[in-house]
Image (cartoon, rainbow, N blue to C red; front, side, top):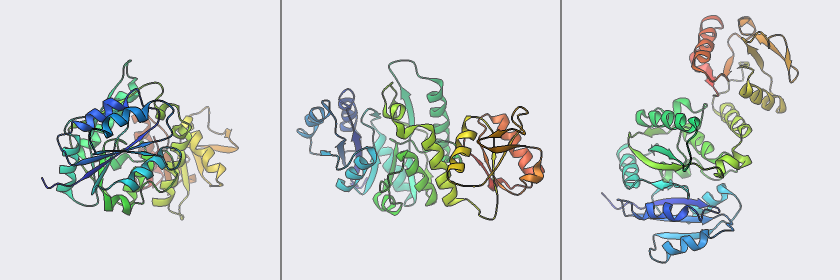
Amino acid sequence: MQQHKVSILIPAKNESAFISACLHSVENQSYPHWEAIIVDDHSTDETAQKVAVFTQKDNRFRYFKNKGNGIIHALRTAFNESKGSYITRMDADDIMRKNKIEVLLNNLLHFGSDYVAVGGVKYFAENRLKSGFINYEKWLNEHTKNGTNFMDIFKECVIPSPCWMLSRPDLEKINAFNENRYPEDYDLAFRMYAAKFKIAPTNEILHDWRDYDTRTSRVSETYQEYTFTAIKWYYFNLIHKDNDKKITIIGTGYRGKKLAKHLLENNIQFIWISNNETKIGKHIYGQLILNVFDTHLWEGSQVIGTVANREGKEFLETVAQTRANIKTQDIYHFC
């Protein structure tokens, strides 16, 4: 293989418990032409000392202080300091499989520009994993195997945040890491989608993804449900919204309410419908809940479903297509 340099961007904040294992896994990669850019986001533990063990013995490890605050600034700093033709991200508390960089790079070289290479992931934890992580892993890996990740972009983040690779020109093309929009991994995935990038698939597990109680994605405000609602709407509005059509929300559960509240706060008009008899005819946030079967009220609109279970989604699509004259491409599932 030609000696393409791969830059591994590693933001780190108070990761002294795990970063040595992470960097050992980088050190042991089968593909040797890499640089690891570790950006310390103002750690108050021994992260810097742990990293120093690696930078002192191997100049492929490079350590920097974050020039701003938070993970987006850390990624921005890392990217600006990087020199590789190909870029990937690694979380400081995770583990790379030995062939991760080799497989991602080979796949990307095979498919070329406007592709993102992704790899399979495996969650692990000292304690028992919750079913949500197991289900997400299975769902994500199935998409990654088939290259269908972007098909479900509005349901969940479809690109594993620490297991992708892009060429530098493609990252620059989508203006990566240059806006302070969280969740930053979901924002990056949407940028890839908006640019019409395709998936370079694989069925190989390349990344071990650690879960623990104080993981940032669990405890930080920037990864709470409302930020996901906001980013989904932002990119739906940017990429797909048809200003000649009404917006209809289906579902009055937790996610439906989050979306409705977000639209109301931004003075965006919508129709809200449900098949729940206890909700129909009532007002939520001052908005009247209409009967799903009153299809003349939402006929021809763009529909956003907030119903999570499969039966509910199938029901939604059947009613929308057969009774409300709504095309498949105007139905979006936000969960």
